[in-house]
Length: 168
Image (cartoon, rainbow, N blue to C red; front, top):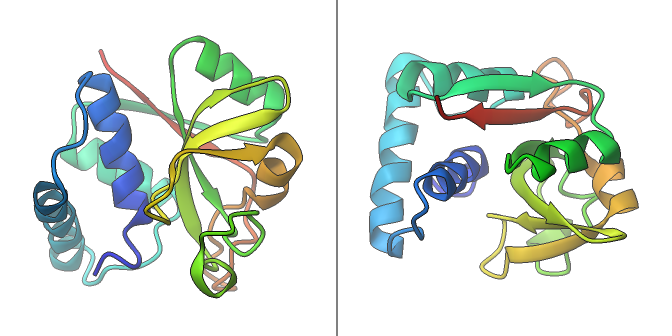
C-alpha cells in the first residue's frame, strides 16, 4: 500500500517538521500511513493518486492546518516560502526527476517536500526512495518536473503548483 503513499508521506514529513520532531520509527510511520490510506478507502472508496486539491481536502478534513495552494510555481516563489520557514509539498512527474535511486525510471506521479535551497539547487525530502532525506535537485530539473496529476489523462500533466500548510 505504500507504493502510492508519497502524498501521505509528504504530509507526514511536514507535520513532524512543524512539531519540531523527528519522524518515528518505520513501524510507527507505517501505522500512520495505513490510517491515512484507510480513511481514503472508506471515505473516497479507494486509494488513488491525489491531486493537490485532493490532498488539500484531506488536510482540511483531517488536521488543524490552514492551507494554501500556490499556483504558477517559480523558483522565486519557492524561495519566498522557504525564507518564511514554510516547506512546500509539490507534485511531480517522477520520470522527469533526475533521481538515480528511483526504480524503473521513476513513478509516473510523485509528491515530495521542498525544504531548502542553495544558490542553484533545491533541497528536498523525497519519500520515493530510502535515500530521499536531503536529496538535491537542480532548479531546472525541479521546475521541469513539477506537475499536478491530471485525472482525465491519468498523467502528471497538470499545472505547476504547491501546497503550503500553516499552523495557527
